[in-house]
Length: 138
Length: 138
DNA sequence: CCTTTACACTTGCAAATCGCAAGTAAATAT
DNA sequence: ATATTTACTTGCGATTTGCAAGTGTAAAGG
Image (cartoon, rainbow over all chains, first blue to last red; front, side):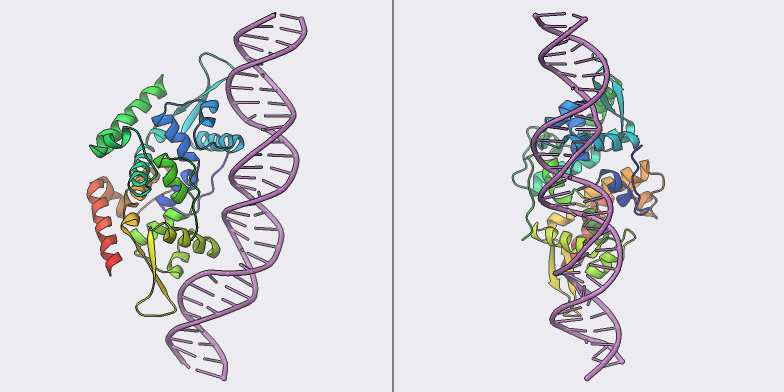
């Protein structure tokens, strides 16, 4: 039961107590936008996160109720991570990061997603939250 | 000229390369929502960040063009930090964190701001960006 | 049955970062 | 001249990270 230290009661601070590092939101990004759900899939991302850091972050995310861990349907030696509603609710944060990065970090590019976001952010947020919820039930 | 290592070209990742830690967004929060602008003011926040970490983050934020540093109008021994447009554009990220923290971290409370956000997020984003811009010009 | 592979971690260790306390330096105030 | 304010810098032990290698369990192959 990985515990998180709370530095203050400010909601920005408490959010960062859990999400404020270089890796956690990348895991959530992979779940929401790349449909990933297993340890092995998370390791394959372009950013190459270390195995021990991934294991640690998954444990924190699980203990914070942001995702759930269950034995996979096909293999008993495999686990499937799924987003909870608390996890689905991080979509607006990730989308805000995408918009900021795309606008201000010139080398940051994204396929069709950017167009979709620029032509209607709220619609995109709802779409990806719906998709994430459907995946969570599957 | 503090340099930031870019892990990939994904916009979420590049944003986190700069903003992804426990302190950076708290500095920006203090500038946007508490009107702070000096080293001493940042140190007084409830989260009690270490002096060397603050100095480091301010240097990164300045080198990334998120804020500017200038000698204060009243005192030559004092500096004033101001947000650039790139800095003002982090407001939606901070607001997304406020909404998530308030909804999912029970101890995270906020005075009147929450009500304001719930009754119109986009209006609130525009309001605080406008206020931040006005302060940046002052 | 026995061996190999796939998958999900765990461990060990050097390097980087953090948190804390104290010290430095320049500009004001007294 | 002395003290204070403001903004850092420095030193150091503790924590966290990144990298490589090892462990354990379940399925698959021979």
